[in-house]
Length: 293
Image (cartoon, rainbow, N blue to C red; front, top):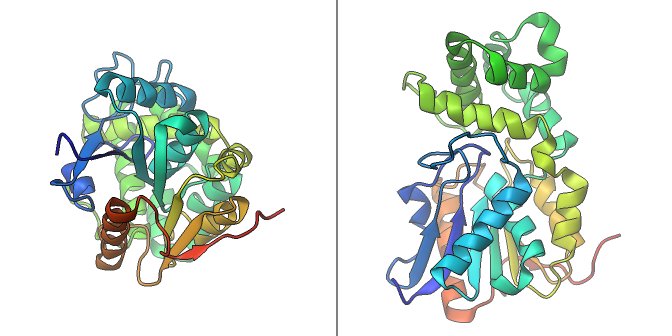
């Protein structure tokens, strides 16, 4: 709705893209829904997908979009990397943000990355083996730098093979069936951007993300996290919630990382509908009454 409550939906990845499915949690007759593809992603017109592509540039892009649309303040929502970007944007442009709805927060630090590229393999050992089978044995202890080298300078066949293996590993962690689409240039582009970011802790790192969140005191913030999330561990939401007095944390017991699972979809719709009525997330979830030190 052109005159509805403005909400910005930030996609994850890094390297993914906006989709119509991401809008399903927000009533289109009452929300003015804004989406865009981040630099180099999806339908982005960036000539070089990696040139000047870093977290600070994306935050600047978001603010330019808000100004160009004439929006004074908006609800900002995102999942995984989108939640990270939303929180960091709010810390940089607090006056432009009415509230934050953050699903499956990704903290971008070494702990998150070592889990995704190693620790989680203990949960799905067969799928992890499928993934590392595409990696030379001598490079398995330095996986992120190797992935970046592949996507920065590898041949097309190798990039497609590694991108397909990476996509399958992500799908397995989300509890989804193996994708059956053949790898193509778009898939390679997606994982090239992701490798670029993850090799550098997304140009942020956990300490900076938590510090940004801790500066949001007084802003309505709801963390929504599936207890079964194997991509972004539930401890991420717990750390963030404990760092921000007044924030709220809603656990979704039957959900993992997939936003479209029935339990998570219900929780997100409930939160979005509640915001429309109250411009607040209270009393959803549990409130953090004092900051954690």
